[in-house]
Image 1 (cartoon, rainbow, N blue to C red):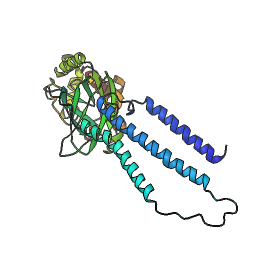
Image 2 (image 1 turned 45 degrees about the vertical axis):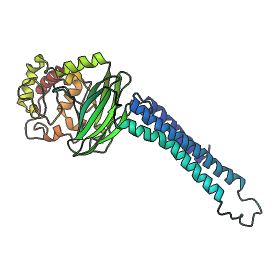
Image 3 (image 1 turned 30 degrees about the horizontal axis):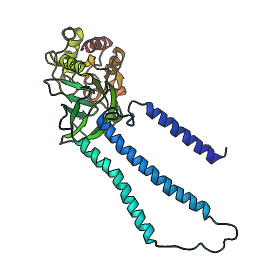
Image 4 (image 1 turned 120 degrees about the vertical axis):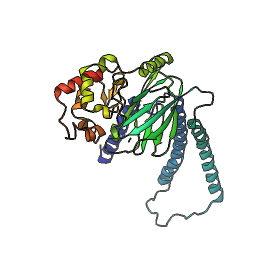
Length: 343
Ligand code: CUA
């Protein structure tokens, strides 16, 4: 194989491999699982086919001309110079406008469709606040708050009201649709809906600092009855056994309560970090970076800076920034038992 051919083959193989990986990826937006994502994919596909048609016609014309009119042995004279062809120019304009209209119709339809849930739809409102680097979700019913994982009912339009605590972030759950920016000083809105039960991965899509790529989230879509049961359980105060555990004492004594809420635990009303009342019911910790296991909880408590660079807990937590003694291994294991008990 010649060198250019080998390079071309390598590029093609890499692209093919990349496409295969993307198809299986949890954030593959070409695999829509809800009506908003579907409408956005439809716009893409129409644009893709129209563009492919243009590529074939224009590219084909160029290849044809290059081959047919290329210089031959004995061609000493410059080729005939042609300029101006009213008929051709007008028809090219008409064809271009026609193709743009084909692209624009589904585009405008999708813009209006994505703007607000259908009037007849049942709508669940969830407030989303972006933080460097985690997501805060507040449900309309009472004190229900979660972080980094949202649970929604299948087949229900969910309207997300997006604000930010600091810089611009962007809310994106590729299989369900999006994305939409969270901008300081205003509330943006985006609606999504999941047609099938399942877990959908998302992440921040706007560069927001050192841990931007670590600002992930998950959406759990549950059948209606399971969602209602989940919401009822989340409304309860933290598990009594956990509240009475030794780790709860460490939690207060070490000042974790200054930043975190654990409903039902006296003094634990901080709002700087995630609400931990039902932390154990979430599948991940640290903005969906780590699976929620005792080992990972310990890893996070031991050295949050390594897990999520520049995070607030490592910066402001007295036991991490050197203004207080680091957590001992005994304290870590008490805290892990406490956190794992917050079902
Ligand atoms: Cu938040 Cu990137």
